[in-house]
Amino acid sequence: MAEPKMTPLTCFKAYDIRGKLGSELDEKVAYDIGRAYAREIKPKTVVLGGDVRATSDSLKMALSEGLRAEGVDTIDIGLVGTEEIYFATPYLNVDGGIMVTASHNPIDYNGIKMVRKDSIPVSGDSGLISIKASAETTPWINETSHSKLGTHKTQSILAPYVEKLLTYIDVKNIKRLKIVVNSGNGTAGHVIDALELEFEQLNIPIEFVKLFHQPNANFPNGIPNPLLAENRKATSDAVIEHNADLGIAWDGDFDRCFLFDENGEFIEGYYIVGLLAEMFLRKNKCEKIIHDPRLTWNTEDIIKKAGGEAVKTKTGHAFIKERMRAENAVYGGEMSAHHYFRSFYYCDSGMIPWLLIIELISISNKSLSKLVNERISLYPSSGEINLNIRTPQEAIEAVKKKYQTKAYEADLIDGVSFSFIEKSGLWRFNLRCSNTEPVVRLNVESKGSRVLMRKKTKEIVSVLQEFRA
Image (cartoon, rainbow, N blue to C red; front, side, top):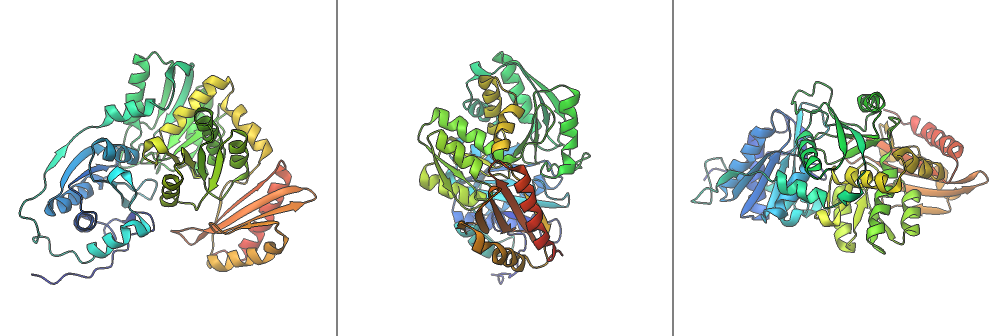
């Protein structure tokens, strides 16, 4: 038997696998990861999917070959979004799921997201490290401990997945709406088309204005990442041009959706968390809602008034999902536009949130701007400010030293959060390091004073500027 190799794999990150094509991630690496997943998770059957990227299909097939070499059967559900893997894994009653996607990363990247049975995430200390170690020492390609290869077949789960999505709304409540939908040439388009057909059959008066709708691996309109301000203009302009009631834009694998009001204004994800929490608590009294610690006051206020219990936990999908399962929470939300649902296997979805929002618009008889602006005026926020810093920890310590003695409340769940009482009002901030980049992320909010929020944001940024890369 050949000696095992020891090749460090730099594509393994804190929550998933992402790497530059060729130097960090290729078909051989994917094959080894498939074999390592099989050895560590020990599944009988795994469902596979991939996004629109040019290399996603070949990487997916390499994963399948690695899995099959270990005797695992694979089911390929085709060109899909990440949440379709989350749905397919329990729906098909298989032992795991693997999605090939680079989401909003540069065009020369790709990545892999993995779950166990029931779509429990594989990340960090829940299996990813052991898979990495195993992949780095996988025996040569022609060696296998199994005398029989696993099987491979293709299967569509689109129809039952769309049926599942529609369970989140009462279709009788939906009023006539015109919606701009921007798939960013990623994978969201086929789901919108399927929903459009369902709406027509159910006589739901929804009109879609489709933007960058067809999947295109070259991303002729730019990498779909609506978190970047420069990527929002097309959706905003289309909302105004078509006199639409709202706009929706997705990232490449549509596990996040970003909303625009009827004026074409981009809505910070923080305020959407509050709206969705309220929607769930209307239907599920006294339930727990999980939220991240970056911006909190608006969410906590809504949850308290709606009779729910707010539970704060560390930022990141693995932490949110783990806490949701532990608390049996009905919903979890992050200001980064990740929204998680107990009845969706505690997973995140980029389709469920906007469906809930159009129901809220319909039953409230309020525009999206009206719903959101009421909350923004009560709890204005800076939105997330990302700064490239040469020494992130040193920068955070400098801010901590300047502010901690003045704070009436401190929270170290994720980075540093301090809350303050001043003559001009109450305000707070959260400052944390990125898990993947040499940047710090700052969020500031106040109670009722946009002037105070802006003043304090500028003040903290000036401290951080001294450490700019």
